[in-house]
Length: 169
Image (cartoon, rainbow, N blue to C red; front, side):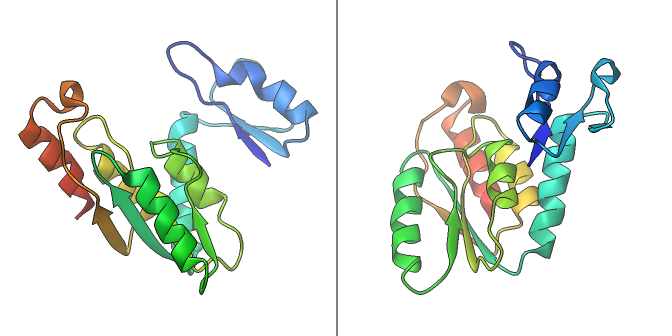
């Protein structure tokens, strides 16, 4: 219902704000005044605001949050736990592997009313990323599936992988 004009090295979400509004978004959060309209909210940093909104929404949710991190097996573990827990509880969980600084806020913000358990997959390719995701999701419980040598280029060493994954705890 809200469009956040995220951007990166190869794209600028501000370019699509008007189109999102035309297609039914209630408002567009932008960070470039050149795209302002009566249905936009101008901020300094759209990603920061998306994460801040998710952090606020998480505080309002009555659901418990289970975070799942690890070098591999996160998605399978999440899917299995969601299938089992859905028998007794209203479960909302990360779709696919949307497990990064954008996907985790989107998972939290899309939690339906009455959700009792959120299962949030957390991926990382550098030190500090899991910590940031935990500050947003505020997990009550955590699982690290395993710690391996994936993404060594971002962590520097196996010890860096251990440090990054254990940020969950």
